[in-house]
Each structure stands twice: as C-alpha cells, then as structure tokens.
Image (cartoon, rainbow, N blue to C red; front, side, top):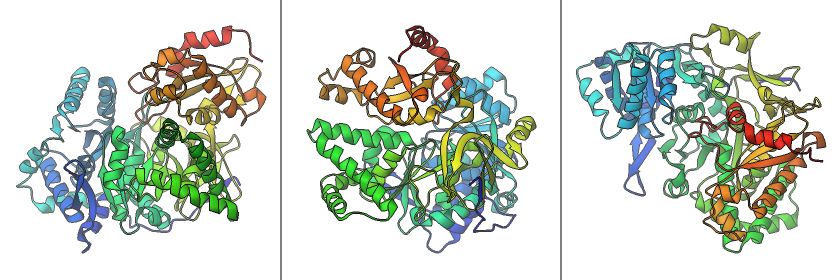
Length: 604
C-alpha cells in the first residue's frame, strides 16, 4: 500500500478554539477533576474544571491589565508542572500566542526563540529561569521583551491581583475571537540539523486532532476514572498535545518534573495510562532485569520475559496454546503482578512516541498486561499522525492514521503526511514552508512503509541514511534501537558514511552500571571510563552488537565499535531537549575516536 486516508469522525465548527474545550468541561454539571496537585508527600488534591477555568480567567485578566494584546507572543520556560498548563490556557483566554521554551535551554537558545518569535513577555518557573531569560534579552537587546513573570512560589499572584478590575466581558471577547485556522502556539523544533524552526500550530491542529483522536482512543484516555501523570516536558509537542487532549477528554492529570522519582510517583498517583518515550520503557524493563539478577532471580525473570513476549505474539495471531496460557498464568502471579504493582497497579495503557520502541519491548509489556499504543509524529504534525488504537494494534508498527489524517509513501520511501494534525507552516519562513510542502503533502524526512492494512512502520530518517564507500545504504536506527535497549547501554550512534564498513560509538548507562558491575564480578564503584576498558564489559557489548547484527545483512552489520567514556546528554550538547541525538555534533566531537576506528586494520 502506498497511501491511506482516514476520514474525520468529528466535524468542528470553524469558529472554535482550544479554550472551548475547557469551557465545555467547566459548564458540565459533572465538574470533573481535570488536574491534581501534590498535597503532602504522597497525597494529591483535585482541581476541578470550574476551579481551573476561574483561575485561568483571573490570570488572563492580569495579562490584559499588563498590556498584553491579542496576537502577542508569550514565552513559557518551566519544568513540567500544573502551572504550565494553567498559564498556557490563560494566554489563550487573553487572545495571545504561547511560545514554549525548554527549561534546560542555554541563554543563546532562549534568545533565539524569543527573538525569532517576537515575544513580548515570558513566564519562568523560578528566579533562575527568569535570570536566564533576562540575560538572553540583554545579550540580543530584545526591545519587544518587556515583562517577566514567575510561576512558582505564588509568583502568579501578581497577575491575579493586577487583573481584578478587568471586566469578564473583555476576557470573553478575546477568548472567543480565535477560530480553527488562527495561530495557537509557536513550538520550536529540537534543532538536530541547525537553527530551530518555529512551527506554527493552530487552534484547529489541537482541537480537531483532539476530538478526532478521542473518537478512537476514548477507551484508553477517556474511560471512567482515566488518569495520567505527566512527566515529559510540556515544552515538547507530545506532552503538550496530550495535556490538551486530557482537557477535551475530561481525564485527570498529575505532574512530576523529576523522572528519578517516577516509580514512587506511579505508586502514589496510580495512573491508568501514561505517555512516554521509548527510553522510559527501556529503563523500566532494564531496572526489572537488574533487580531480578541482584536478587538471584535472573533466570526466572528471563523465562518470564520470554513467556510474556511469546504470549503477546500468540495473542496477536489470535490463538494462544493451552500450555502457553498456563505458563503465562504462573508467571503472572510470580512476576507480572509485581511489575504492574510497581507502576501503580492500575496502569492499562501506555502511549509511546518520540522514537521507535521495538517489537521486543512492545510484546513484553503487552504480555505482562500493559498495552503500549505506539504512535508516530513530529512537532510539525502536532505529535500524532498515526497511532495504534485499542482493538487495532500491530506491535512493531506505529499504527494507522488518526481520523482526519492521511499518509503517503513517496517513491524514495519518504513518509508524507496531510490532515488535521499538520502545521500551518514555519513562522516567518515561507521559504522553508514551501520546501516542506509539495502538492499539499508535508514531507516528514522519515523513511517508512505501509502494510496491506495501512499500518505504518518507520525504517529510518532520510537525512541519516548512511552510504558506505561500497555504495550500500544503511538505516542506522534499526541497529541503534536494538543496542540501546540493553540494560548496560545508554546511547548508540552508528557511523560509516563514505567509509569501508559500519561502526558504532556506544555509551554506558551510569545509573545501571553499579548494579551490573557488581553482578558481573566488578566493583560497584567502577566509573564509566574504567568500565569501558574492562574485558567483561567489552564482551557484553560485543554480544549486544552481535545480536543486533542478526537483523541486517553482512554489509550493513557493525564491524567495529568503541565505548565512549562519557555519556551523550543534553548538557554535553549531544542530545536535544527531547532526547534526540545530535548526530553531527557527536561525529564532530568524537572525530579522533572515529579516526581510530577506521585507521585500524579492516575487520572481517
């Protein structure tokens, strides 16, 4: 199949916008709890729709009183927290446009986002965030930037107080003025290949996509009692879309800014569904493996994992042998129940995006009783273009298009997208917009294929295809994802452009290393640099590489690798805030290591 189009299941009036989703919830007699905020160490206090709306309006009045005009751009620089969404809606109620800024951004990155968008004000979570913003404004002499508001520690009370005299009618006039085709937000791309581009997402992108997504995902995100804890950055389009979808669905959302406490947060909040990037699923699985090994139950867990995967595959095929069902039931009591309990005990669905999950992990979680709905999208597509849906799941694919969207595979294998999720264009960059759209189709830059039922599989990134000296085309993601899934590995970058063979740079997982080392006869105190030289570590990584090589031809296989003694991170400049590898930066910074690989005798 080369193209699939799924018609919209919901038609939205043109004079609608994101604020209408909240208005509907606030006017519903049920007055559902849309949010929950921490109350003590383990408790959560509900915030119902009407209370949330009242505070949104109070803040919107403060923005109006402070001189914010319709169409003004306002930055938001904060970790994931309740106030992020509160401020986001307040900006819309005031008729303005929000500009997310990653809270980990450098001064120069903040300066670029604020200058390029023409922002006039910014919300910062803390004094440190506001200090970075002020430095950015001063460094670029941004004359338009006039106001800075703090979100934490009752900082928003300044706006609440300022807006007391603003009439409610003015807020309503501004709130209702925007239509589906009007700009809602400018989200900057992660900048893996150069300067971030300002993606123009409209109210229609969010509203039409939310309402149509609920037509097929309601069982996962809008069932009675549905709730999720948000830990992904709300500056990223994935978390942002889900936060708006949750308002549309009437589901309950909690927030946590620190994924180091994720399991404890799962225990206290008890989500029924979560959204995560593949690295989170890898961490959960690998932590379970290492814990089982440290308790002397490694073999039992290994058998339980294989049984879960086998059970999932058989379930997808529609026939589960009796003995497999019996074995699965035994492991459910011994292993799977404990894993589900560790994740809160109520988790049924997990939405995965931001990169390929891999069949093995997908089958594992499905086999232990957690359905992973893997999807695909970009900043330019308001997150999901396609997603696996309850009742329509093919593990290893990213699903079929959501209603209102279409996917086409170009002659060179590039994925093209069209529909309610696709952006209006790039902010003030008509040249880039015209390059991105051809005959109405957005060129994603990703490579993939559609099966006979319209399920999409991602095989690589067009710009990342490696062409070896022998002319062999290699998609690095297929190898990288398998290697990165191992407990000992943090990151993997496959290389070989114009070279005689394929190689890889690999980093070790600093959090997993102590436990792994102790279990394999090394000191738990060993650091990454020392571990990279240890024969037992090198042998373990070689085994992981060999396993990944089984999935490709001999010409595509990794012939040599080096363990890099420091991890790739956002702080080191090698990862974007959305955890994507900055491949060009890695190749530049580790050119000496790469030179060493290719100056050695060619491996067999």
